[in-house]
Structure formats: C-alpha cells, structure tokens
Length: 340
Ligand SMILES: [Mn+2]
Image (cartoon, rainbow, N blue to C red):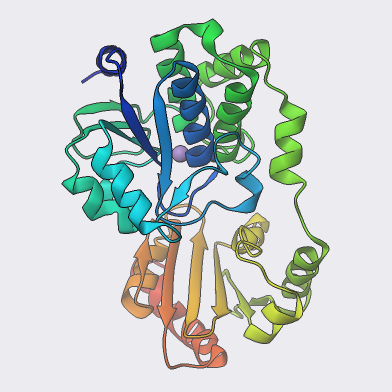
C-alpha cells in the first residue's frame, strides 16, 4: 500500500458518521509521538470525529503543553477506562511506531479489539495493519502526518496549534534538524507550517528552555567529577550513584541525553552511563560509526538495542563492580567487534 493509497483509504474510512477513534503513541512518549497524537487529535476533533489519546505510560512534562495531550488517558492510572475505550473504538491509530509491541500493557487489548487498525509511521519493517501509511524516508511521523492531514482535509484545514505540534515532532526527531533531515521535502513542510501559523519560538521555548538548576548541577557534577576515560580504549564511563540522584533532586528524564555528551569528543567512540537505581544498576551505551554496542550490552549486561544505542542492567552488584566489569570487558569487546 503506497502512502497516497493509504491516505485515500483513511479518508474514505473517516467519512463514516458516529465514529470513535483511539490514538496511541509508543511507550516512553517522545516529541514525535506526542506531536503527532496532538495534531491528529486536533484534526479529528475539528472534523467533528470523537477521539481519545490512550497511552500505556505517562507523557513527560515538557510535552504536556501540546493541545489534547493533558487529556490523554494512561493505562497506568486508568486501566479500566483504557480497556473500555479500546473495546468501543471503531478505529485505532498507531502513531510513530511500527509494531503493537511498542504499546506496552495496551498490547493485548489492542490485539483483541475489533477496530480498524491504522498505522502512520516512519520506522523500518512495519508490521501489518488494516491501513498502513508508512514512509521510512521522512524525518518523522509528524512530517508524514502533514501529508495525511492535508491530503484528507486540505491545506487550509491545518490550525496554528496543529502546526506547532507537527513541528515539535520534526524538530525533536532530527535533533533540531541536525540528523535525518537532508531531504528538501522536510523543509517544504516546515515552510508550509510557518505559513499556516507555526510559532517556532514558542515551540523552542517549551522544548529546550525547561532545564532546572538541579538538573544542570547533576550533569555538571557527572562531567566534572565522575566521567572516567579508559586508559587504553576510546571509551568513557559515567557512573552515577543513588545518593547523587537524591542530592540533586533527580526527576525522571533529568539524565536524558547525558550519555551522548562524551561522543562530542573527537577521539571518544563509546560512552557508557552506569546509573545506580534502587533495585538494580542500569547501563546505557552509545557509540559512533560501526561499533555495535548492542553486542556488548547483550553478551555481558542482560540487554541489547540498536548498533549505536543500547541498554543493559545488572542485579546484585555494586556500582564499582559494574564499572570494573565494563573496563574488564572493553578489550574483549573491541577485539571481537571493532577489530582493535
Ligand atoms: Mn518518530
């Protein structure tokens, strides 16, 4: 099914009256998932179609300014209501994910539902859906959703609120238009959004000017006092203790992106954040180029993930022991996977 065929089918489907639509983002909602849910809710609501956003977890604070997002129903808080909405839905729209598996605790209820399943997404290898609008070339689901909304209702249907939401996804999924954003089409969409009322300054302020002093001091402490470079390999570790998290009033998400910072050093190729939590030690691996840190995480740290971004965990070990294990397995990793 091509994108234009998918849009035509969705348009026909949405022409029916009395529809109830449920919109679902992926687990651990990011800017693209929240932006696309917000914009699509806005469009459906404007078209007079009843719709609900249903999430398996909670949506982070920095995205809660987006219209319709504060009204999202979370399975963590209202499981019964979520099940009811999924059972009564005529259409379930999966936004910014390519498999129901990324819907966490919602998965069995979505699979059981008789609703028409619509996928709008840009990740590779999407699974089957009744209507699948998938394009892996676009920067973001929000970029693709611009074509969907304007294809169904026309360009002038888009409101400034929808424009801000779509830009949020395009901006955050590309690291502020730094990666995965070399197609001219992406900028044509941004130009259209500006003409339709996008307020870039407002979006930037909401997304990027939300730091708290305690978070900056936590990151500053990690970089100044904790960052350790391996004596022989281009590897940095960032150990973080539970006491430090408590001392700096840690909130969920405060360490987001910190593991990437050491990769901005030219000669560093791998960065490993090792964070002590109440029950276990969590590891977060990042790498540059063709260095498969997912293999390191898989073989030694009960984890896995992508080539350049992976996670792992250890139970029943101290933070120092885990740091030592990373150092002790570095030579094995580089000789096995990086040929060094
Ligand atoms: Mn995305």
